[in-house]
Length: 388
Ligand SMILES: Nc1ncnc2c1ncn2[C@@H]1O[C@H](COP(=O)(O)OP(=O)(O)OP(=O)(O)O)[C@@H](O)[C@H]1O
Ligand SMILES: [Mg+2]
Image 1 (tube, rainbow, N blue to C red):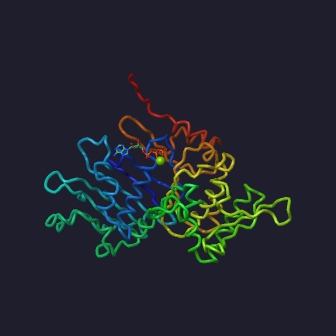
Image 2: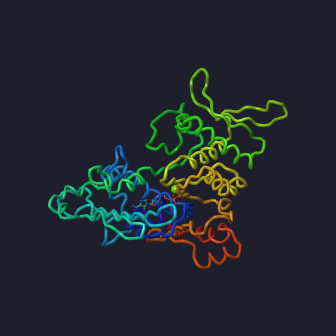
Image 3: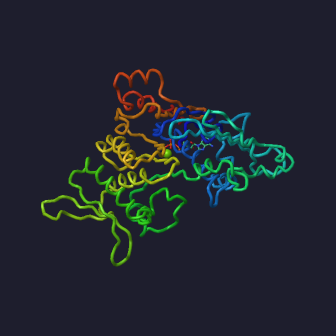
């Protein structure tokens, strides 16, 4: 399943925005501070509400510093924060629609309350069934019920567990090479879901050996197309400390080649390996990936969409990837599906979101890459005024 439509109202720097017909791979483009991470955060928010442990609406809002921090500073009369998501199955047929609105009530207790929660399921014939539509009578009688979503309540979500699991299994990653390498030595707090890759080696260690070896083989194969000297990517445990490690052999003038462990890999090699690993991790829910191009050289970045697509299809994953990027090289790949390009357009009144425009589509049809046809328009930043 994947998200095919996302609508945001008063979410961070989006006063109102909607993206539709999203495919399995989505690239979000925009200059710094245009809201790429904020857009991903709306999906993470639904994850945080649905999470089986430590989830829930109040917690998800509080962690973000309260409604005041979340609500768009450009909101005027209508101050409700609203997220809507449509979920389609692997054939692209609409299966779920989830709508969640919340606000701080005008009077009484100033704790956030749900203003709308609606779950609609769609049958094979496309017939819609509304499973919940709140506030309902009982919520009006006991307004405290509007503290919590039905999404987070096991007793209330039996009819849409599939949707709950879809959201709760969303993964967000913003890999930091140094944490990937030295996570065990740096220690410190690991956030839910390990977004920065501190426990990446443990993640590999916890995977059953057959699956692990199959994934590493696919990574090795894919990497060899860009680093031909590389061979034999292996998982092993340090004999003395018991710590898990990755090892690669590089073909070399010596017959045995040179062996390297992950702390000797280049930042880029390790980062690309982790990305390729994550692409293969099971699951049916979106993987939100921040700027995969970081610390990779442009020639490799240009090949990333191809490599990612190939590893994904070999592992038969149907997981959706939502990727933020600034990279010209990444978007120079003409194989990118234009339906998956989302452009953020900053203005003085918050950011807008849009798909590929008619002119851009014509340019793509004429053979230009997204980097040539779309990126220059996405780079136009707002004009800042300076007064001395
Ligand atoms: N409630 C809000 N209302 C309006 N703007 C907000 C709100 N919350 C955050 N912002 C602003 O949104 C902007 C975009 O932030 P975000 O981190 O999503 O940008 P980005 O596109 O990911 O940038 P980068 O490329 O630097 O990672 C920031 O300037 C931030 O100040
Ligand atoms: Mg960002």
